[in-house]
Amino acid sequence: MSLNSTPRSERLHIAILGRRNAGKSSLINALTGQDIALVSPVKGTTTDPVYKAMELLPLGPVVFIDTAGLDDEGELGELRKKRTLAVLNKTDVAILVVDGSVGIGEFEEYMVNLLKGYSFPVIGVINKADQSSVSPETVALYSKRWEIPFIEVSSTTGKGIEALKKAIVEAAYTEEQQDVIVRDLISPGDFVVLVVPIDKSAPKGRLILPQQQTIRDILDGGGMAVVTQEDRLKATLDGLKVKPRLVITDSQVFHKVAADTPPDIPLTSFSILFARYKGDLRELVRGARAVAQLKEGDRVLIAEACTHHQQDDDIARVKIPRWLAQKTGKDLKLDFVSGGDFPENLKDYSLVTHCGACMLNRREMLHRIRQAVDAGVPIVNYGVFIAYVQGILDRALQPFEGQL
Image: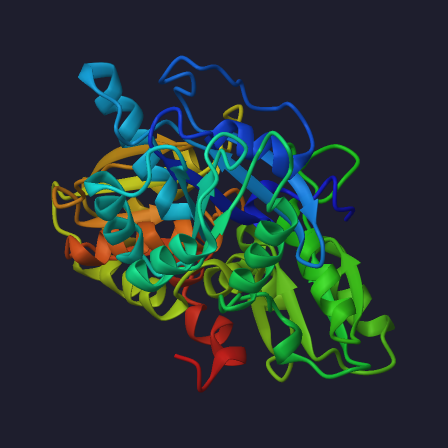
């Protein structure tokens, strides 16, 4: 996967925040070397978050997020601020932009305290150095007072841009990145068999993202990936001269693959691997066990992070409702959301069933899990749920013994 084709969900998210007209859009343009954000002296030019993917060495693929000013006003201003605040749930590094001609005031104090309430690193930028230079002593004072690094920058002349890039790299390396999908479960030289159904929902000419990422992680771990379809699994296993270390399957054919995989070969699914990679596997397993507690008339939320054309056998709209009905024997009330939509208040639900989150970064998926936990609502992802309703969850979790 090239840097240019790296999906947004796998990039470090760097949010640019501050007052209106503090120079956030100009800063993004200076950092990326491209005019991708609309710049104007009129306050409030940026109305919605703007995403720009680029390569920032030595980090690699990142995405910068330009946001509306958090001092926006009026009814529309409140909506813009709400969208900006939502960005913080997916942010890995935050850059607080201060207008050098205005300096730090009560608003900036509010912003610093707001951002430090999150778990990501924060970098301060004193912008517009070409218009009103700030002394090194003042920069040092800001850094000491707010306990975050401040850098004087001019988006127009380029002053401080390289120093800011270096600070971003250093801040990013302080983050604990969960970048292991499967290679901690294998040893160099191990065979791993991946079962990949080719059905109507499979993208023509390519594998879906979790499958690509899993193959790459196997290769990074020195393993050997063997890819097959569910109706050829037996022949594949018989054709290998050595027993594979692991079989990984698409969760929709879990039952058949479990039947065809000998008990002495560990088995799991892409969705369960990604429940660990993108979220909290222990919490999602708790959510699966909670299916047995559903009662007549309970509301269940089925959430997908992407939008796609509904198929005849769509997993969210067709298969999961059917499996829920079969497993519980109850008449449940189902709600569906997709894309960026996710209810702020989940207390009306008895269960959230979520997709594998291949379109979300880890921080945003963890935020959704925390929302459910804080509301006292169990949450499970598709793969863990399917393994549970098909009675093979315990087997699918065996590769993770000691982690749950």
